[in-house]
Image (cartoon, rainbow, N blue to C red; front, side, top):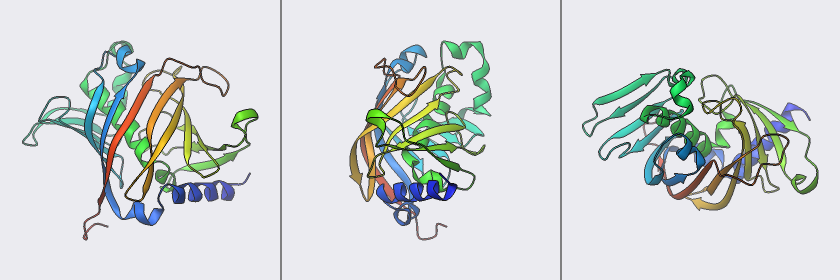
Amino acid sequence: MVAANAMQIVNEAIEAHGGMDYWNSLEALDVEMSAKGFLFTAKQRPILQRVRMRASTREPRFSFFDFPKPGQTSELIGTKEVRILDSEGKIVDRRENPLAAFHGIRRLFKWDDLDFIYFGGYANWNYLTAPFMLARKGFVVEALEPLQGDMASLTRLRVTFPADIPTHSRQQIFYFDDQRLLRRLDYTAKPVGGWAHAAHLCGDYRTFGRLKVPTRRWALPLPFGHRPLPGPRLVDIEVHDIRPAPASSGAA
């Protein structure tokens, strides 16, 4: 299939999830979310229980509120930096080029707060801005042949991410149903390890404003082929609420 067909699929998916005009009218998504799973145990991280977050719709920027401690705000700023601010907005901890820190031996067994802010920040920004982010400059999409059997009805796109977008892996597979709703992502969570292949499933769609969003997400091991193992759930996410924040009248 040619690239034009791939972009047609992207445009149809964007329309199915709320439309680009509406997305462009927003500044951010204010989210309340819980998350747990094997990854939290493996990296000695506490689970997230109804944590407030904000995802920018304009750039890869993400915030956790009252995290890691009450009164603190944690921020991901693209690929460049993660930081923790106190209640007065003063930086209490920061790390430049946070991806580079994952090459240390300690990260195999334990993540510190800044490790988690990087991984959780970019991952949730990716999840909350898909499929709209696929229309950003630098993304390359290619339509793939359908699979056989019970996945034959799903449309697949191979997506190559640009270098300025923090993400699990530069190439990922997006699966859309016949309504063009996103149902699955396949990726390698490189900060976890080059072996960390996963199928990330999406369900329980709800509408917030005009956005259609999956409110349940769970990632399963995908060691080979196209069928994930039944467990363990590497990450299990529940979105409780999303409040789309309109752009101010002076916003670009």
